[in-house]
Structure formats: structure tokens, C-alpha cells
Length: 151
Image (cartoon, rainbow, N blue to C red; front, side, top):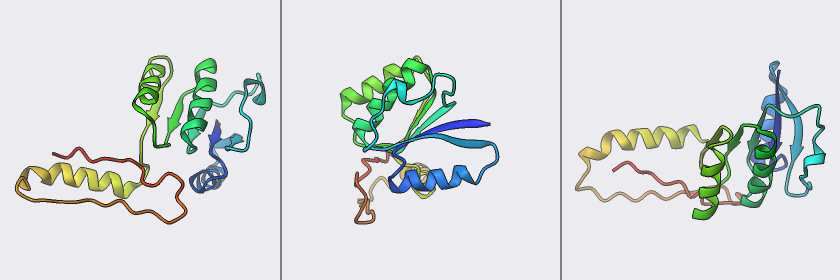
């Protein structure tokens, strides 16, 4: 059984993730945190640490849970956007101590488009292409600050 701490549990993606995990037989949501939950080391039982943290929160929420992850040597998936260069540097430094998977977009379609653009971009050197990122009107961190490095 993989025990998961979901950070950003009341957001759109957090709720989808919790519903998905609850439908699995080999994973369990052990803890849920969101921006209205005070995260502290004592919030989680010493005897029942999560095996992984999945973060769909805010920059502040990620940095808070990252400190908990580092203190307890818990791998973390970061799917939050909007980090400054300094904050990204901190995440990179932390990745030397714990496994960190960081992505600015979990969308299959975005990753597929990135792969397609990487493949065809050498043939489009004289083409002017503009990509506009659109989200639903309630997306908190739109745009996701995802960039294609296809060329």
C-alpha cells in the first residue's frame, strides 16, 4: 500500500487526484492539506509517514510541504507553477537529498504537443508560430508558465 499526502487537496486537481486514489486498491490518501490547513511536522503522525507527497497547491504551499518532505526524507511530486528562479534553485538543491518530480503541466495533451513540436520544428524554421495558453476562467495559476523548447 502506498500512503499519499495530497497538498492542495481542495483545489480542482487535488479533488480529482483524491477521487482517483480512493478508487485504487494499492494506494491510500493518508493526509490532505490545502491553503486553509496549517502544515506542521506534528500534523502528521510520527508512526504513519506518507510514502510520497503529491503537490497541486500554490508556491507558498509547495515550499511549506517541501520543508516537511526534506525533514522526513519523503519523495515529492510537484505539479505547482509560478516559482521564481530562486525558488526553483531551492527545489533543485533539495532534489539532491530526496527524489523530486517537478512538472509545470500534468496534461497529456500538453506533453503530446511538446513531443510533436520537438519532432516537426526542424522543418518549420521559416514559420512564425504563436501558442496561446487558455484555461478555464477559475484556474488560480493561469497561465501555467509552461514553455515549449522545441527549437
